Image 1 (tube, rainbow, N blue to C red):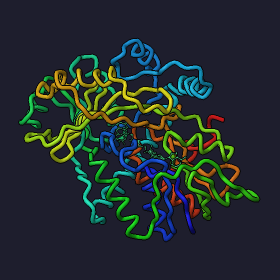
Image 2 (cartoon, rainbow, N blue to C red):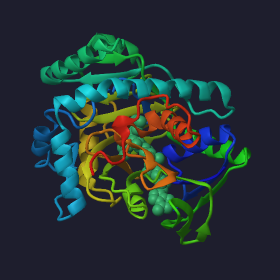
Image 3 (cartoon, rainbow, N blue to C red):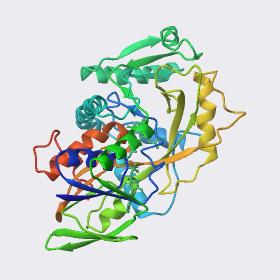
Length: 414
Ligand SMILES: Cc1cc2nc3c(=O)[nH]c(=O)nc-3n(C[C@H](O)[C@H](O)[C@H](O)COP(=O)(O)OP(=O)(O)OC[C@H]3O[C@@H](n4cnc5c(N)ncnc54)[C@H](O)[C@@H]3O)c2cc1C
């Protein structure tokens, strides 16, 4: 089949990768210049350890406390917007034990499937994307954060995940070239990390080499339908036709869905990152600074710091107060990395596509059998990219799905 994929982020490229392997002809359309969207500047962590969805007990109270601090890791910009208000209400309703209980095993299986596909990709493909299976470290400074992290580790152990509690000295021994100022940490050896920029350029290269067409600067704005099928789409560059259509538009997917009668509750969660280049003594392990909610990832000789979650619409502008919040927190854990006097010049921002319950939307558009939607992977879109791509291919080819799909239903909030 001739398949048009809207969106060349990790979700769109992975869908293209598996659909192309299954023998389909691929056209990918993207409105951006394909250089630095959300799938490029992220923290590069592959996180089977992260089995608890964002919508979980305690998050609402924490979020409200954080909202009064301009440098905190989480913020919702108040605005009179019906989509935001309904999303916030659904998020509030989802942040409970029941949501966590029913999602955890699925999130773990989804992550493990995806990591397995990354291993296969690293083995089979000629392009290098710095895929390293060293696990990640959850680092903490306070007794309270330690207690919270031990509780999370305990839950992970119930799913037979290996976790290792480490003293400050043990973490320091893993990072002999960089000073640490922490109380301790937890090592999740199941996790991995990679360089998103290398992954994205490698994927685009092999897709094109194998015959895919990737067009940038093409903004899709509507669909043409006939007898329960989509027959074409309109864009700023004209009309395109295909047999199948995949909507992988990240935080912009609700706008695309409207043209198909699909209502998706989804908000962009803005985050920032900056990358320090050419370090002589880089860190060995990626880590999450748990109190600050900052991710730190070595990528070759470079070191990337990322964090904050700001629900502020589709605005990508950089809020310097939030960036300062990230910068200030780093030397509390890594005293050698103090950028307060010399703020990073180049700060990247990206929008995580966040659903109210922390699970993505993956499925066929109810009214149109030849449209598949795949969006809403929030903080784990990179981790879940290959598994999502495979699930999309299975839907298109009407194969048995590798995972139970009910919780990904597009209409679960309608
Ligand atoms: C600071 C930060 C750190 C992160 N760290 C991690 C991490 O360590 N691990 C992890 O797993 N995830 C991480 N994430 C999340 C991850 O980056 C996202 O979940 C993922 O990139 C989403 O991918 P996507 O392909 O669904 O969306 P996107 O990457 O946003 O791609 C969607 C594409 O669709 C295009 N598009 C939209 N509408 C249209 C239209 N109408 N016409 C044409 N094109 C359109 C857009 O231009 C865009 O290129 C992080 C995110 C942030 C912000």
